[in-house]
Length: 190
Image (cartoon, rainbow, N blue to C red; front, side, top):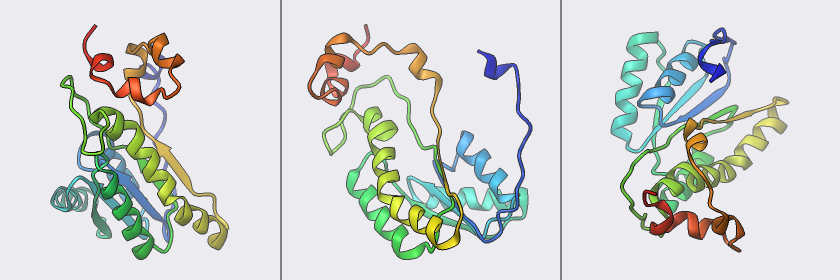
């Protein structure tokens, strides 16, 4: 694919006074993005992981590598709708603005499992959960835009997995496409 041949230059900006939030910030792209944002000195860098312990560990590594000291840990489980709701409430109570949201957290598995909310785990963690998270944070994002005359950003990180997946015609024809996409029959190997 072409994106592997051309590497764009690393963009830097002054993020002083801004708040950046990154989900899945303890490894991979999320961790590297958190380090990069830290070098741009945002007022607040909210490091979101499945546990506060993982977030705190990431913050220590980010500080050691960049010298940035304003990392804030938050816990979020995208596989649990109540966790997402609680997170959004906490964010609305503790954040005065949200300029950049990087929705990066995801999982990959070949084992079929269902969340407590009744959805196939990857569907909920990689799709339903992030959408719910973004929607519940929109009031803060819109308030940031209005109050500070800025254009906040929501970045959704994805994978190349879509190129290796076929959505079957019976799922597309279903009155509720999410139901077949979450079923064991659909998620099993072909």
